[in-house]
Image (cartoon, rainbow, N blue to C red; front, top):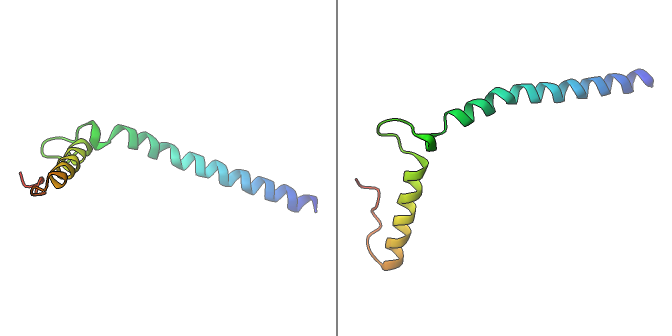
Length: 71
């Protein structure tokens, strides 16, 4: 019974360690390459998407056309 408990403990710790170490590079890449930080010429950034949605919402409230994305 001792060996089963010990092996289960070790395997769970290895699983947790593997999950933590595989997530570290993903987080580092996600923070450095976000489109809201600027994606280059012609990139559809998050801020532009938010502005388009707000403009569409304002136009819908006024009863006007909602074609805000045709630029």
